[in-house]
Image 1 (spheres, rainbow, N blue to C red):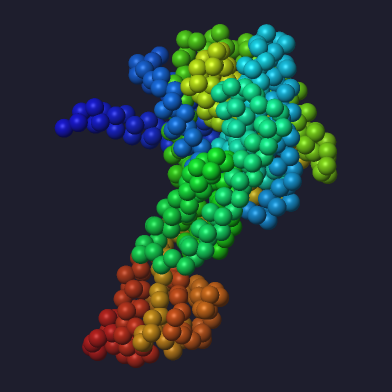
Image 2 (image 1 turned 135 degrees about the vertical axis):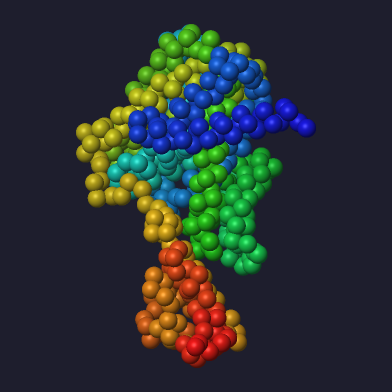
Length: 499
């Protein structure tokens, strides 16, 4: 017996189920779900149930693992057709915009809070990264032009890479080498990271297209495994693993893969699990008794970020591109912060940088305050700026939910060599009312069959059947596969003459 493990599983399962239920509640109340997860972590922590957790190194490690999954899901669900036109702007925001934001916030907190330059720049670096989870969860509920949404999503997926590099450099030693060396190092890590992501995405796409895995459930696992492999390969080469993950995810998500919807659904569920675990863990790490003293510095740093650093970084990054003032204003306000800055704050904390504990508390309070303010006002602000797109769907999912509401199932029938199904017309299948052949895949091309469509060897049929007639439809298909056209003269199993 392992009573400690049993209690941990009981508590973990309870927190997970409460967090899943809280998604619906947070949607109704308009409160970001990440705040609910943070509150759950605080509630079970030292000031709630009394669980004391202060392992910063473990939090940092698990936080990076969660970010890998979240960024991979963002890449897998990004559409290249909408991403390509904004790639230049998103890249500028993720590089030039990050540098501008770090400098502006660093100067502001140095002057207003009296911090030394290294710690002030750390504040700027930690706060310069927009959060993929917050951006994906918030923007996909709003009716906005695809260009704006794609820009913000691509930025949030790409800017983690340079920010992590800069935070690590500042946490370890500051910029001890000449500036040109540090710039070359960042360029190397970004360039090699992107190349590793392309290589992993291309190789993964090739492998998944040619693999004949014995179960459909293995394809989603393999796809996510490829993105994790991209991160690990990038890290081994001392390159940006986060950028490699995003690039590999984009390539895999836009390839024509078998079981693509299953892959996306699995990645979405895994990303939700990663978000829940990450936010609860960060809430557990926080010490509410110290947060009161962090409110004023958090407000000062947050105002410098939202009112000065973000607008200026957007304006500078948008100079070479055609971006209107209204779009720039929305991009400035929609630079959401979430779990990523809190995870980044654990890096100087684990390196025991002087003032890192206060930095973590300030970032935690800032994320809570400004997430409430920004996410609650994004919709009205977009309407005020007239950048909404009422004709755009807020979110489009292609899945089997309509079949579930109809209590129907999707059946797949193959016509192998030697099958008596070959040569049979669709109307000769004589499927029961409530079952219908909706699609035929032949030689890699799908089409909607007509009643007189003749089936051929190698065809793959998709049949929608309601729950009440599924068994009858399966029996009828077995009968036709045994007797062909003559099945109508035999019983439903195709092996006996009816009375």
